[in-house]
Image (cartoon, rainbow, N blue to C red; front, top):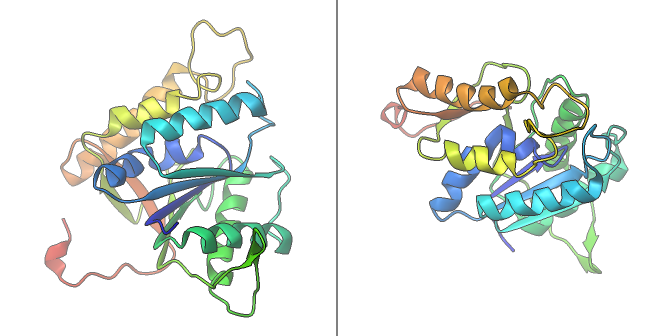
Length: 238
């Protein structure tokens, strides 16, 4: 299946938090979007891997993405090495995305920058003809995405560009809250973590509103880039 955008997250819920509004908007515009989770989030303080699978499936339906897969790498312990790169390359060659979106390049959780670099490196390697991969016994063709972008997570990294997601913030929050074991729930008896407070979930909406304010719209999501963004005309910029 050829898709337009492939979003990677080190854990289920990373994509929803980082670029859920952008994904919902692109799906509404008719783009084919997929999500690849690197781990099942089994080291999370709340819930379980099985619970996270269920939550991710629910979020997939909310966002309306075409496909979602989990590579089941070891949460907290996966590495940016040949073994893991080849598995990511298989996904890139399978779905042939024009754009890949992945974790923040620097963040509080060690898996986020690791996942960011792993996916970025795999995007480059996927374009090399002498790296051979097979999926279901079929040899894959080389494929390199046109662009790799990184969403913003815990840290307030300065974005290189922002996407107007006005009208899609509620859908973003709905997809985040599909992970009901992870985020604010006043009735939960489980341990409190940095992301279970009401302040955290409010901050997700506030960040979108604040980035939107800075470009004169209701809401936006920010991204960083690995190379310059080119436009045909200066008038293309908002």
